[in-house]
Image (cartoon, rainbow, N blue to C red; front, side, top):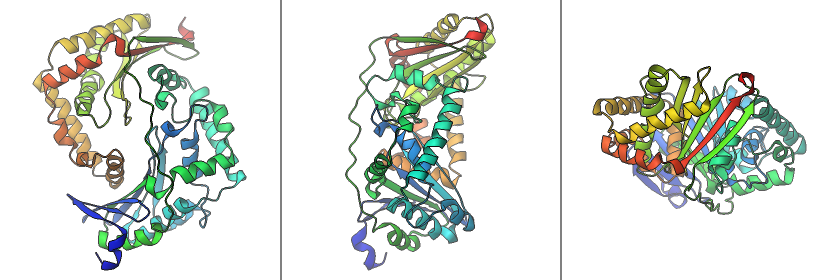
Length: 427
């Protein structure tokens, strides 16, 4: 690097990734790929719905929309990017908000210019805010109020979490919260969370760090830092009793949901827990499918998966009963499968199949520039860069004994939350 840049960043080499910290504390991660003319520019802001207050939810998701309403110097974000041959997207989760552009590497400065300008300052005006409030409210109505099963996650999360802000979904707890957002609250949210010191810029593709670092400094380094964002203080206490809720809705079929609290994303047990979810409920050869669909013929669909949050993850089972089968019958059958799973060690052949499938999926998805760029930023955001490009090795450390030990810890009655989502059409 040229001497003129030495004061503005520090550098550390981790495999193929170079890391820089600018003077305003923006974290920059660059991975050079020699076999592509394309590049992905990804910006992760460490703010999600968990950063909201329970009486004012929906801000993080609304803000994702508002970020496309125009910035201080660029009124039309998408138009400029399309001229440069790029495309873009964004998403909000309970833990983070992420934006990315993929475009020809020779046009990377366009993406840097666009992202830096909306990090610098947005074009805050009431008309734009009203437009996006209307869009998000319509999304809330279509996907959560008027759509069959739309309120499942509101119900299930509220039952599973008693103190942690995961208890409401990313869209928000109530429609009224979104409708009441003011322009000043929007500005306050931006200047607290959308600052360089709360962001990670990751770049993956056909570029050289020595070439693009001066461009990054040019477009980002003068953006002021914001206040320090403190970690979420609410800690969800271990569940002490089995929880149950039952609702009746005008939906085509009844569905059963069971959720179990499991470990955080960075815990060593995360990979065996993910393996357990695959063994139990992914594919026709999974334990739940074989027992409930093939042997007992009491359900038409069954699945098992992790919620994928940074903290206080959930392992969720959902199953749709056959006609004439009650949710209570299905629940007892699921508990019997889980009991058997805990008592009998997983066969090595079965375990190897699931681990190979997980590793093949990782290898396939990591061919994408965007996936690599997002993963870089994500693992940095949870202080776990050692997992980047190394997750396959962690899956291969999972043994049958570990699976059984973790399963016994998870599948306890007092760790379960069960939702009977009943169809009034079949009563």
